[in-house]
Length: 122
Image 1 (cartoon, helix red, strand yellow):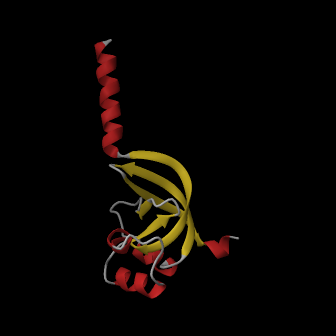
Image 2 (image 1 turned 135 degrees about the vertical axis):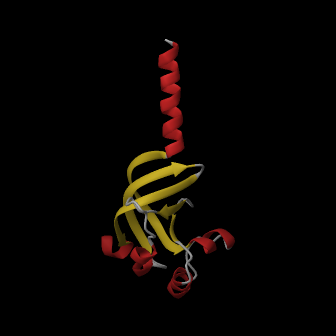
């Protein structure tokens, strides 16, 4: 009986350490510079040009969802690749992104399977 409890605890710790994966979800919000989302507490980007300038300078783009949650776009490939090149066309825009979400220590990351501007999706 003790070995079953120990095994269950080890599995739980392993899953927690790896980050909890939620099923594929849909996120609606703005693609903006991650620094501005935190430092300026923005609800939406200042402008497309501003988001692009920050991204080109190396600041990661993120998705600020309507509920205020910030999603960090990540790669499922190993070695991992940055997602700014993929998101540049959406900088400063309102988007709908769907994909697998990972939660760890209060942060959320998304492996984007599909992304489009809100106007394009309607």
